[in-house]
Length: 298
Image (tube, rainbow, N blue to C red; front, side, top):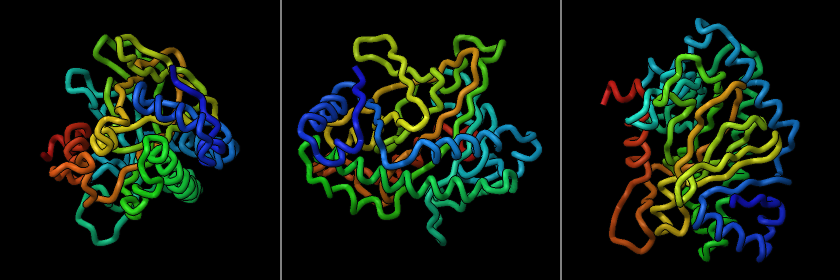
């Protein structure tokens, strides 16, 4: 079961809610949040802004095509990602932006690309990005407390986060699609915490531990939370990364995930171990395996 959690109560440290979060983090890897500090109207504006961009002609979107870069900044056309090597490239479109560190040679800190149309695109997206970062920081602190760690343990590792904000556009499932075609194929997220805003349209499915799939959706103004591979490693499996997918149906849909990932030099090996797993190395390896234009360069 995927619990629906009151975010305000969670952030206040309510013992019963922390227990629900601890169980969800360990057993299913997903939860949903309502009563969050980001207003519904603001999230709706972000959806409308991404929607206006995705509706533009391909010739316009191509001016910020990430395929011409050595990173994942800008527009990704249908087929730009292949999250499962046994499936065909995903048929969704994306727009990625992230944390910039001027002068860094790491692709995870690369400069963002911004389209000229819609004219308010950059302002709306950057404002949401800042708020989503702050909320994710507080959420990760609460989750640390839920699993018995110091609530402040993670904060020092996220002052230059490799945090990626994405707009996903899933068209109707194409008539030509076969069993190896997906909006996004089965995968686990790569980083720590994913803060996912949804438009209320069904499509996301979470794999159950015993097999089969659980549909998950949330209306605009609520969030789906799931965890990635780094956090599973970092916490010695007390938080799990769960496979999920979007097959697609007869309705188009959008989602907006913030992939909240730590600073590049963070060691995300199990706490207390002698291993060193540099966050940037893990993340870049997964990006190089996923983005079609980065596969070609690797």
